[in-house]
Length: 308
Ligand code: NAD
Ligand code: UD1
Image (cartoon, rainbow, N blue to C red; front, side, top):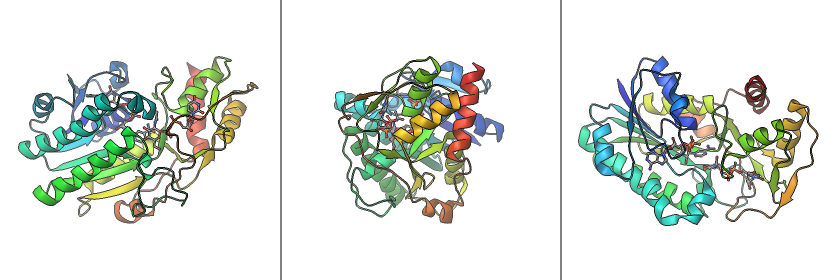
C-alpha cells in the first residue's frame, strides 16, 4: 500500500509517517517546508520526499501517482496567521484540500483522511462538543477547515471517494515547533520555562483546552483509513478532559522544577474560551479512544526536553 502524507514534514504528519513506515506502508511526503523540517523525517529514511505546494494542483497530482490512501495534514495551522493572511491561507487550507480530493479521484486513490479541527465549533457555550452540534467557525482557519470537511463529504457523495475528516482538539507532543509565537501553547511554555524565561498567558488563563497526545492522533488517522463504512463522516479526536492554561502552567512548572511568574497579556483575537471533545462517536465507529493521559504525555515530553 502506498500512502501520501501531505504536510508529512510537520509535527503531526511526521509522527504519522513514522507509524505508517513501521506498519509497512510505502510512504510519499508532499510538503513545502514552510513550517515542516527535514529533520522530522530522520526516523523514516526511506520516505520519498517531494517539495511542493498543495495549492498547486500539478504538484499534488504528481505526488498522487500510484497512491492508495492519502493523509492530508498540510495546512497553515496557526489561527492568528490565517487572520493576518486570509487570502493566502485560503489557498492552502481550502484550495489545497480541493486539489487533494480532485487529484485523488483522478488517480483512483481509495481513501482520503483529512485533518480538521475543533476550531469549527467556535465559542458556543455547550460542552463537550459533539459532531452534530451547531458550528460557529470564528476565524479564516476554522471557515476553511469547515469548507474542507464539506468538500470531503461532497467527494464521497458525488464520487464515492472514501473520505474521513478528523476534528483534532489541541494536539501536543515531541517535534511541535516552539519557535514561532503562533506555535502550540504547550511547546511554547515548555521551551520558555526550560530556558528560565517567563511565558505569556493571553487572557486570564481560565480558558480550557482538550490536549490530546500526538501518538493517539496518529492511531486515529490509521483507524480512519482502515475502517470500512465511515466514508463521508467527521469525528472528534480528543480526550474528553479539559485543562485550563493556569493548570497547564503549574503542571509544567512543577515538572521542570521552576518557579516563574507568567506575563499576562490581552486575549488573542478569535481565541476560543473553552474546548473539550465528546469523542464517543470515534469510540463507537472507529474503535478509537485516547490512550495517553495528559499527565503521561506531559511527562514524556518534559523528559525529552530535559534530555536535550
Ligand atoms: P505543522 O505546521 O507542524 O504541519 C503542517 C505541515 O504542512 C508542515 O510540514 C508544513 O511545512 C506543511 N505545509 C504548510 N503549508 C503547505 C503547503 N502549502 N503545501 C505543502 N505543505 C504545506 O502543524 P501540525 O500541528 O502538524 O498540523 C497538522 C494538521 O493538523 C494541520 O492540518 C492542522 O490544521 C491540523 N490541526 C492541528 C492541531 C494541533 O493542535 N496541532 C489541531 C487541530 C488541527
Ligand atoms: C490550536 C491549533 C489549531 C487547532 C486548534 C484546535 C496550534 C498552533 N493551533 O489552536 O491548529 O485547530 O488548536 O483546537 O497548535 N496561549 C497563551 N500563550 C501562548 C500561546 C498560546 O496564552 O504563548 C493561549 C492561546 O491564547 C489560547 C491557548 O493558549 O487561548 C491555546 O493556544 P494554541 O496552542 O495556539 O491553540 P489554539 O488557538 O487552541
